[in-house]
Image 1 (cartoon, rainbow, N blue to C red):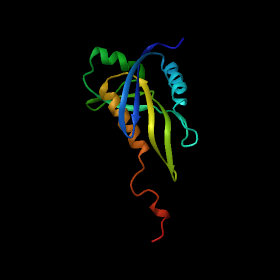
Image 2 (image 1 turned 60 degrees about the horizontal axis):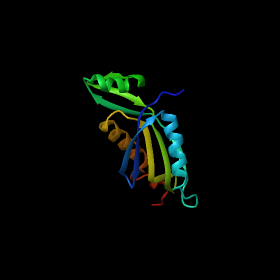
Image 3 (image 1 turned 45 degrees about the vertical axis):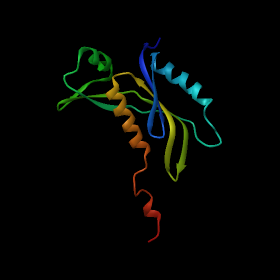
Image 4 (image 1 turned 60 degrees about the vertical axis):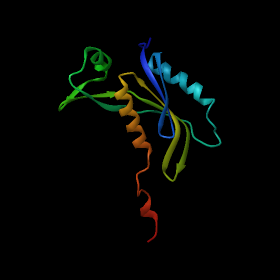
Length: 145
């Protein structure tokens, strides 16, 4: 039986956190449950429905409190300089998006991950938003001068 733990479900709409929920269940069960819920909000005529498992690396200030260490120890804490680096399992459920060439812009998605603290949530969301934002100037090599 998968371990029951505190996970956070973060709703992101138009690059902003719209809502956060804490759920006490296994990470896998949380992901399956939210996939089912979000299928009803998905419009297959307008968007893809994508579920990604993407481990995210976060940095935490040292020293870690006992409570914080307990939350992250199972994810392999490494000391890097004056920070602790932790790779946490993260799932993205993208249910409203559009393609612009080879780049996808996600309007609405949900991130599900173990709850560490609010700073960890912000780091993960910022990492994901950065990965989903097309870089300026990409694709220009196809334009004629």
